[in-house]
Amino acid sequence: MSIALLTYSTKPRGSVVHTLALAEALAEAGQRVTVWTLGRGGDSRFFRPADPRVELRIAPFPDIPGEEFGPRILRSIQVLRDAFDPTGCDVVHTQDCISANAVDRCIRTVHHIDHFNTPELAACHERAIVNPYAHVCVSAAVAGELLDGWRIAATVIPNGVDAQRFSDAAGPSGAAARAAWRSRLGRYVLTVGGIEPRKGSLELLEAYALLRARMPDVQLVIAGGETLFDYQDYRARWEKRAADLGVEPVVLGPVDHDALPPLVAAAGVFAFPSTREGFGLAAMEALGAGIPLVVSNLPVFREIFTGVARFAADPAELAVQLAAELDGDAVTPDAREAGRSLAARYTWSAAAQRHLELYRCLG
Image 1 (cartoon, rainbow, N blue to C red):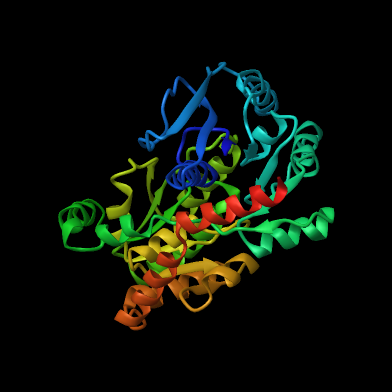
Image 2: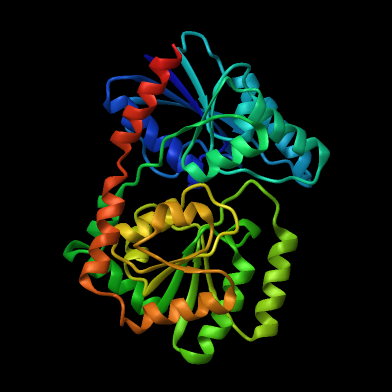
């Protein structure tokens, strides 16, 4: 079977990580797989090397100084449309709003549902949901949103997770790398995903200020943040609020692929207070490293993480739950093993097989 997977970037955002890992698992299963994407800002390769059995097609997408968000999205769609060649493809499977608008007939994975205020972008989002002939969601919660909002029934295929990479980082072979992060950062709460509304960055900031009053030695460390969207106003609000609260989180920005697992494995606790999410891949990776997890009280997190995480409905509760994990009273070997076991169950091989079943069923 010849399969084209399309995504919007080469950066390590959740849907891009998903696309590349799924492509490799499908290739491992004997399929011919090509990944199509945009090379933003001169990028000519993905955030990590890919299995050579996967063909990569990266369309150049140069920056235009001063370009506004809306026109940039529309240009992204057009550049990917112009580059993509569906000749010989048995399956065309898009992973986001941009790629779903860039092709004529496709399957679409809806990782989470966005909300845009600009009519132009809202129309793009709507087309990316209603035009595909079949839909996949990575959780039942998102599938429920799709059914409630659009009367579209999606097939639920959860993410895979490279749990072993994070488990290894927490073991003897990762000791030196963990020690290097701890030497640099001290004791820390980690979150991955950057500073943006969907990640609950302001809520986490408020919680951190409360936590610091009790545990002044604890740092808040924020990794990641490569995004297509323009969150400058939100980032300015976040920085002003941090100054008002008198706290200075450590903002690392994007972290190298190989440096991320020991960063996660060296954390005291992983915080993931998202306001919207499709699965929680970064949180599942933290469980793979045996790190305690505190998440927001979203239906999708109740679906995925019940029994292995603490839940928080607001910043005050988030601070309490983070402190409880940092105190270590509840972090037993059994609790860590439960998280590792859950992460290990979500394999990319299983996800690829589920996708192949769907592709064959759709004919």
